[in-house]
Amino acid sequence: METTLVVQYGEMESPVGPLTLLKTEKGLCRIDFGSAEENLPLINAWLKKQALKAELTFDHASFQPFIEQINEYFNRERTHFDIPIALFGSTFQKKVWEGLVKIPYGETYSYKDVATMIGSPKAVRAIGSANNKNPLPIIIPCHRVIGSNGSLVGYGGGLDKKEILLNLEQEEPSQICS
Image 1 (cartoon, rainbow, N blue to C red):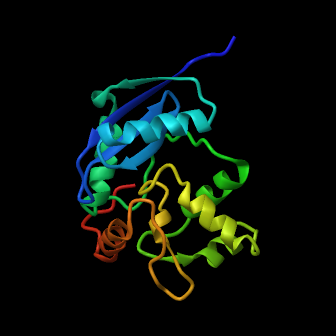
Image 2: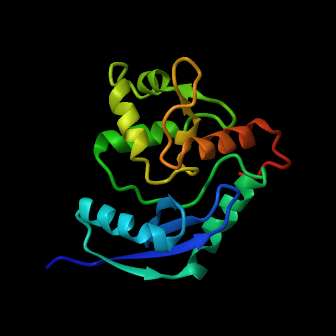
């Protein structure tokens, strides 16, 4: 008998516009730029692609710990996150995403740097593809990956948001929380 996964969603406002947050009982599993209303078709398609039989419910209150840490990040009071996450993706994608978390706050790596870091130096294009499918932008800092020539390239939320996030990280954090 197939079990139904309970997936809750909520929204928050941020300096890059509204964010839609999704979580399972294991942790935060997805962040989408934009409101829940505009993201629900995309979310349902993602659930189907992941072969997840899910009951999708709105529950803003249960997202407070996640919202708090994301707000601390935007207020330059947090340089990394310690919230539970639940990743859905291929083994290779998860390896890339785990590598992205190791890019230090305020620094940028090229796709080639990431490929080398995870031990797949010839997988530069595959790194780009996995980066593009990152379900937790901001938390898994794919915005810190740039072109080898230093240019801002590709970002699911748009290059304007990538630039905002990178500029935010160039300013000195006001207080470091873990």
